[in-house]
Image (cartoon, rainbow, N blue to C red; front, side, top):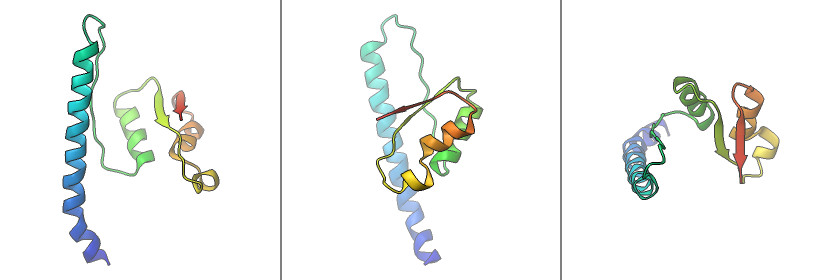
Length: 99
């Protein structure tokens, strides 16, 4: 099984990079439409990790004032705890959870 997982690593990493590039293009396009003199600034960062650890690292590295995450729709997260709940419980930043 580990060999099979390793074999999937390259295609998964490649797909992840493609998704990130697509997201950057979409954000750039949207910002060009609304920017004008708004003074809005944006940055796109990727972190390779589980979602909670990646968000904590990103928030710390970027000295975030707040964190905004989507609510989980998975039933298991009600028992184990979602990324959003874990971030709220960490109590390091104000966390806004959106549906």
